Image (cartoon, rainbow, N blue to C red):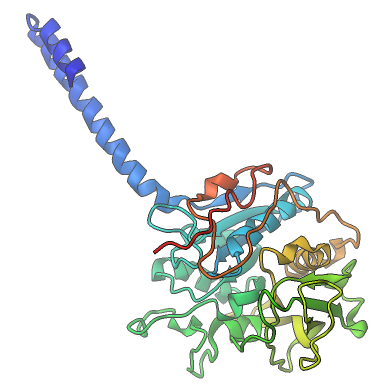
Length: 368
């Protein structure tokens, strides 16, 4: 204001100058207000995070969605996207669950940017209990209607959960407990092959050893896959006839790779492929893994299996190489997974480029 008055006083004897000064002052103030309003709106559109193919591009675009409450999808997903872009030539669009400030919020039912699915060649989803607004969910629905390829991790078997009062939502059928005959079991059952069944091992007390089924060793997804050990406790699986089961998971008595098997828990199916059908009869490929926590992808064998599964899902199985580079890009120091213990105050832009640290901090204290 002081500058504005100085201008006016200096130009007092010239009415035209006064008019110009007032106009400039008003425009300046309007610009400030508009800029402030823009900053209030912009964070809600903080997605997407883009990783462009840094090696020989393969022509495929992937959309990767991260919003679960517990297993640190918001760390797993950008780490995988970097590998896929830099080492394997995929163009990757990463979409996080965000809070009202545009910061990453684990399990948030707000995932702006899903319109990116319109021209996506593949989807990698790691969500839990989301109830997205219809203007966001419609993009996932359209993608599934055209039978786009899907890779689903861990809690995505129960990726959607609509609360009471949302029964009239146009996309309620994706609810993991949907009982209608038209889409029984929701997204998990109809696309990934299984809805939520339950835990089979104890998190943080029992790790899991994953073994290739010998008869399936020649499957492209299993090329180069060995010595798979993950931190996440076992999940139950209830196989149905259309699963092509590739691996079995054995809960261990410790968190060590050489831990003794739990004598009361025999191996359980853990990774499989299947197909699903879109609205016009198209067939889409699906690869499901019951694991994928942020600490799980520290294991090279597991990491390779997921990368291979993404290749297979989009029809590039002929390009899978047993010794391809699946090394992590940039500093990756995952937080121990726990409900509500995501790193706080992080925006998608904090993960731009290939050298920023994932996660951006280790401030995992729960907030009220």
